[in-house]
Length: 355
Ligand code: NAD
Ligand code: ZN
Image (cartoon, rainbow, N blue to C red; front, side, top):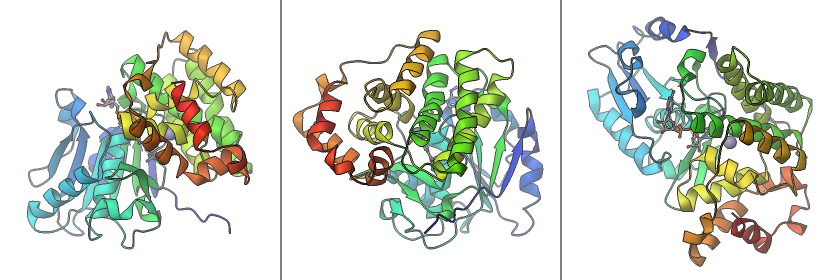
């Protein structure tokens, strides 16, 4: 069976296109005379973007604390808050932020129309009802969350996405001005998420012409951004993230992402930095990608945290192995159908112990 995947409904791209958000939303309002929920990264609470959010009196603006990546409990809490706001469902949920906030917006829009807890839906195609209309506006580029069919959540027992066609945004607003001025470390970590998506997609066994076309373009854009110095680097990184996301939509990520999920679950490392930490130890699997990644790190004077396992007890290490091992499609993409012959608990544990 070939994947019949759902794509984002509408896309607007360009410097300053954030100003069109009010028009985009008002074109929908009037259908239900309801309200809009804006979920916005807390970093913008004291920045000029705050004043540009087109929220009216009856709308809700929720400042999302992204110190930790999104948890299922936080999604449940927010969905309940939104549900009780006006005694009816909102017209739209808009997420303004990096991957964490875009994922929160996706998850809240899903949980407004589906019963139970977000944790019940971590997995593939468990969502039954369409979400409330939801729009994503990235302020960091790299994760590809703007185009993906998942919202990655940490639940009580696992870090796993709610993967479904209903998860996909109805609208995305890609304004490169919003990602300028991101601190260098964060810009690097989130951008490397995209670079690693490309390496894992382009070297994986699931590769096909669709994924290759997007993956090669995204990789070329990452090289321009991180090894060159283009004047329009924000525009290029934004499109790299989009294309990288499209590439993995039709293939899969690999070893680095599997290990990174374990690091996030046990150590609370954010996805981008977790990927960078893991990737630096993966020459065995991705020799060229890791060599180029190190050139990019040197160019931007990035130093990664080391000796992370010093603070992890044996139970924590075993939990990391559990979280990584369960991601079977990632291992299969990276290592082929017989991946279990090359990868097992011992090998994964050894990889973690080097970090
Ligand atoms: P993030 O959203 O976690 O944000 C990282 C930090 O950057 C936060 O402190 C935030 O306040 C800050 N920030 C955001 N925008 C900023 C700006 N313009 N200027 C300055 N600071 C800014 O980082 P991320 O790397 O974009 O996203 C990581 C999250 O995305 C993880 O939760 C991960 O699981 C998820 N993810 C989702 C997908 C998907 O397909 N849904 C794919 C990859 C990763
Ligand atoms: Zn990623």
